[in-house]
Each structure stands twice: as structure tokens, then as C-alpha cells.
Length: 221
Ligand code: DC
Image (tube, rainbow, N blue to C red; front, side):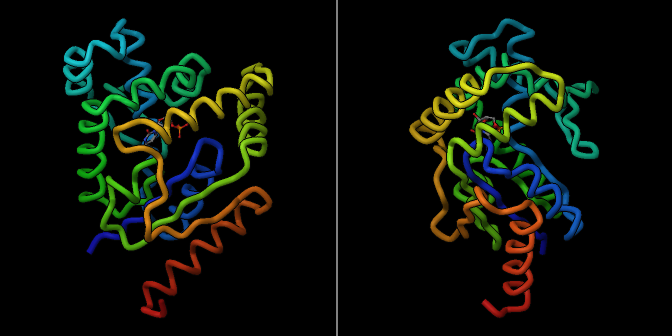
């Protein structure tokens, strides 16, 4: 049986950093589903496809070859990993991610990936929709201030100059859109383990998750 670990939570909760370390520890493939929504947003922008053009958008998505290679997102042979982190994509991605048809296509792709590989997948609807049968589910949270500071530091590190307050407002806006949209809103799965990462190091969180996975694997839970 394939191993599947679902990691959900709001932007900046530490999901991707933590999921990458967990993936190494358990030899799993890391799938960043947020990057996939960002990739669709990038390609839509490049092709001038607005979120209202649902049919054209779906055709565009179906024409894309999307895969991960060493945690990099490759679309039609191009490594778009850096470009999808830019503010113009961050500011628009929630609009594209809220479209049911877009979600349907990407969820299908994500399910196919989980059939081919042992995965740790992070996103917003992994434990509730994409990997609803996964034996290991986690819901990571942190205060909006801590999450905004993390995003701010990350962007500065990548040489992208931003105002902390803009990032904070963006986090609040994205939380609202992600939790209130009709299609697969961000929600903790009933059987997910919730961890507040505000005052924990990455390794401490990964240790907590690893202990849970090992205990469950050996039927101690
Ligand atoms: O995790 P992130 O910031 O890269 O996610 C980008 C956007 O995509 C964010 O607005 C939430 C959305 N998203 C989603 O709706 N469902 C997922 N499984 C992953 C991300």
C-alpha cells in the first residue's frame, strides 16, 4: 500500500518547509499543490486568460504538462519555481484557486500523483478532498503575525523587496478567500492532527509528526 501524508493549513504556517524535511525523513515525494495553483495562475496571466474565462482556462490547464523534479515545478519543460513566488502571482492565485473547474482538474492530477508515488502533499484541501483516505493527516496553524513575518523574511531572502504590512494584509485577505470559498474551502479534516507552529522550530514540528506516523504505523495508536 502507498504511504500518503496530508498537510493542510493557511499560508505561512510552515507547511512546505516542514513537508520537505518530513519527505526526506520518510523517503516520500513532496508535492506542493499550492505551487500547482500558482503555476496555473502564471500561465493564465501570460496567456491573458482571466478567471472568468472558465472554458479557455480549462483548455489551457489540460494542455499543460506539469510535474515536480527535485521539488521544482516544471511546466511544459520550463522551471517556473521562482516566478510563481512573485507578488503578482501571490495576489491573484486565490481567485484562480476558487474556481471549481480549475480545482477539479488539479485535484485529479494530484490524485494521480499519489497513486504513482509515496507522497507528502501540502495544500488546503488535501486531508478533506485530495487524500481523504490518507492514514496520516496534519493541520498546521500559526498566528497571522507570525505567518506574515515568515513570508516577509522569505521574500527578502529571495531578493524581493516588500512592505511587511502589505504581506500581512495579503495573508488576511487570502485566509478569508481560502476559508470562505464554496469549492473545497480550507478546513481541518476531522481526523487531522492540529499543530500550532508559532513557537516551534521546524525540527520540533517534524519530530511531532514523525512520532505520530511511526506510532500509527506500528499500530500503537
Ligand atoms: O500555499 P500557497 O500560498 O502556495 O498556495 C497558493 C494559493 O493556492 C492559496 O491562495 C491557496 C490555494 N491553494 C488551494 O486552494 N488549494 C490547495 N490544495 C493549495 C493551495
